[in-house]
Image 1 (cartoon, rainbow, N blue to C red):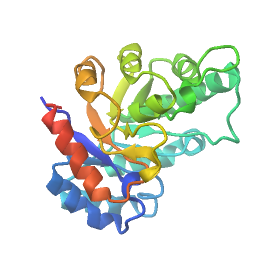
Image 2: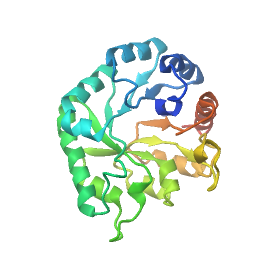
Image 3: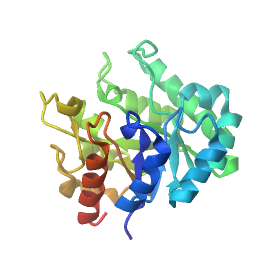
Length: 252
């Protein structure tokens, strides 16, 4: 069976209004969207109606780590309103980060506490990686391993293959390493190093990642959907269309 394919709305944040994008995404063949804060925050019920009107689902959504820890009930309510099943904190700022195993283990424990609150509501919590989780700490260990080990089995991973490649790591190896923890696969693609156009990002299939070789690994994970994303496209519709057409051509 093909995977449901979602579109990360952050990709087209610079081309408002977002509501006008939804029917276009549906016409391209997308099944769902993945919103980021603040797209849904002002009126989650209205946002849900806009999705329903367009025939799209929300499978997971990005949210602040602090929101999971300090406002878990509010974001659980948002998840239930949107019809999402996965709550996804995606980031800690440069100022917050520490190059110590303790810091990243503590982050994993925070995710685990959020997951304990979410699970009774039928929700899951997943971390979304960038590049910094794959850069070794001074002792040679990696943040991503500390996060998932300390988080335990209740903490999942939305794996962003593009950021892994940017970190100099191997997305295929990471798909294998955490196959049992991956709940969503973000097929972000990156252009060759040194590319400045669109900040070096590109549509899935137009970059340097060998998706055809990696596609069989997707089925070995626990992922139940795929997400396309581009951090700064000059033409969001071209990116969205090329990405989903490529994924469907791969049989995903």
